[in-house]
Length: 184
Ligand SMILES: Cc1cc2nc3c(=O)[nH]c(=O)nc-3n(C[C@H](O)[C@H](O)[C@H](O)COP(=O)(O)O)c2cc1C
Figure 1 (cartoon, rainbow, N blue to C red):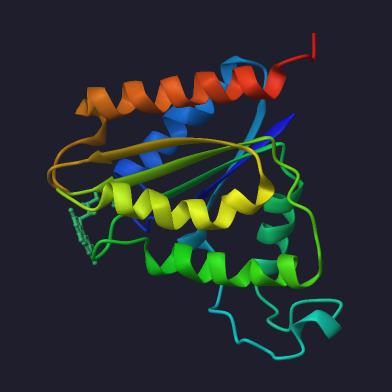
Figure 2 (cartoon, rainbow, N blue to C red; figure 1 turned 180 degrees about the vertical axis):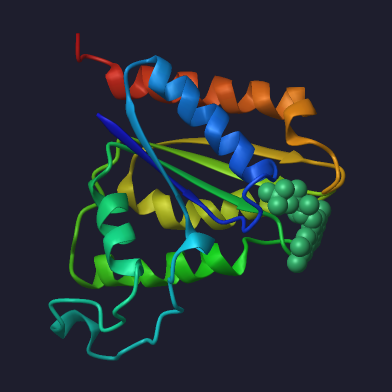
């Protein structure tokens, strides 16, 4: 049983990454294997929209997008988390979403039973951003859990955001219940 988290924030010690860590720690406490992939640490270029995408056995972009998409498609559960930039997902997350087109053009199934979506704004736009993230996971037909919140200011220590942390842990607990249902 494995959950793969895809993080769209470049700030390794920011709110988005901290909330991912909280959720993954909670999942690990339920015996679930976890992995966090921060997109900004890798090269995931924007989709080049090859018209004959479906005819290629591999994505024509030889970067980290391919193995990250493979992990995403094979996971039992996924977390997609993004900061809110101009009312939407970060460019890193958008590039990843567009690159997932390769999976769909090749009829590759998404295997996850549950998806957790996290969006953190400064003040507004988190709900709309969660809806952007939903576009990628809704095709899997899995359970979808969401967390949208505001950090207030980038200077505030994420560790002090008790309400957001609580929400991340609750989301992860629910995810663990869904993933482990019927397995004991
Ligand atoms: C390029 C950029 C655009 C942003 N746009 C918005 C916005 O539209 N609405 C908002 O409330 N906050 C906006 N913010 C603030 C971030 O969403 C906020 O600081 C969030 O907590 C960042 O997540 P992080 O701590 O994981 O980096 C923006 C920040 C940046 C860097």
